[in-house]
Amino acid sequence: MINWKTIPFEQLTNHELYELLKLRVDVFVVEQTCPYPELDGKDRMMGVQHLLGYQNDELVACARLIPQGISFPSVSIGRVATKQSARGGGLGHKLIQQAINECDRLWPKESIEIGAQEHLAPFYAKHGFVQTSRMYLEDDIPHVDMKLTK
Image (cartoon, rainbow, N blue to C red; front, side, top):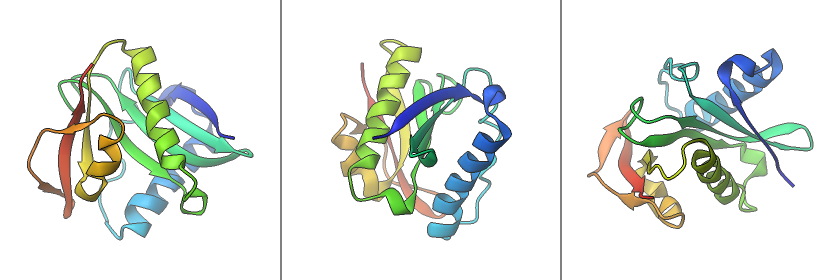
């Protein structure tokens, strides 16, 4: 059972912020051996929300929900991550579905755009996202843009 929490940056406790950043660095920097600027300034922008998924009081999943006009012309979901030890039971699908639900709650009837790692395009396609760009490199990792049209 995952307990979900959606919260703006300024309401994160020190502990929540530490666990959020640790999970993202563990996945994106350490696991993927990709040194890149994890702290990009978007976390604390107006309207940005952080989706946190807890299992037995342990942060196991997160995503960043971004209003339109910051990362893409549409609403966007980014920094989607699951803890390595919690994978294999469908947590990623639960996370992306919860992120879509929260975007629908926050920004009703708005399309959602993402910059997905290319190998994850079939995963996002299962949730209705359609590829809208050719492959491009972001931090030396192949990515594609995808959109869920509402």
